[in-house]
Amino acid sequence: MRTGETLLELVRGGGARSLFVVGTGKNVGKTVAMRAIAAAASARGLTVGLTSTGRDGEAIDAADSLAKPRLFLQPGCVVATARNLLPEHPASEMLDVTGWPSASGSICFARVRRAGYFEIAGPPTASAIRECVDRFFSYGCDQAIVDGAQDRVAALAGGGDAVIVATGAASARTIEDAVDDIRALVLRLGVPACDPQKPMLKITGALTASRAAQLVSAREERQIVVRDPTQIAMHGKALLGMRGRLDVRCERPLRVVAATIASIGRDRYFEPRAFADAVAQATGLPTFDVYAGTMVRAA
Image (cartoon, rainbow, N blue to C red; front, side):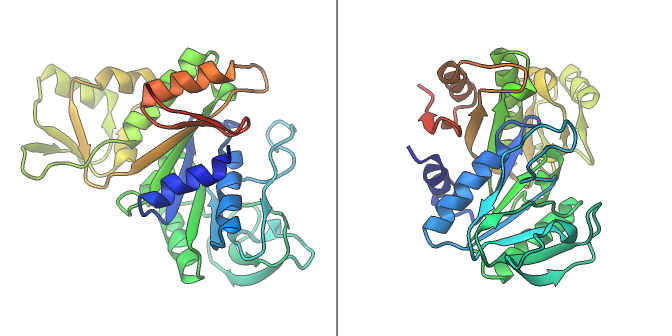
């Protein structure tokens, strides 16, 4: 099965032109998923724009000196990355240099002119990421893809964008822990839109675990409304424990379309089919093994 093509269908089938790939931790297959989707889009003749809230595509991880998946891009792709990370050979055309700073130079936009390996490290703030996605479309991109962090999803909230969530053996000790992590992440990012016809209590700022506990103790039955899913400042078991006790909604919802798994971590291994099945059952999402090229759905 061609996972990149199937994931692209899920994203574009709902009308989303921009995609955010979010992981439960490092080294869980986000870059591999992004690379597969970008390749599928390019093969279809779509122009792709790519950026990252971290750093992707480098051969060696700067944190632990271990190998990382490379990012091979086709001609026509547009990247938003740090100026000093662009290849020195004439493989790209500079489109613009912004005033957004980074540790590797100002963020710039460049169009790939020769297929090759690229590193991307994009804007440092959520607002700049939103502007970055909009700029991709101004450069003629048909599909924008952001390899992102959970706290930057607010940049896309409410814009009709799609989200893919990723988890893997590198971010949890057991399959059960990994499943709990991604179930909580999906619950958080998939918070539904508020119903304006029903009573609500709007939360200014973050909905913390302590604030949620107070509302539960007060037997609050109104909708608890936050601006967007990133305003829910709870993760893992704390977030799962709130489920069913409060009717949490948001003003700017996201659309989570799929989950991916990476069954091999640097210190452990999960049986791939059992892992995929467990994630699919816990999230209700089509779940892709981006390394094996397989997909399972919840029964």
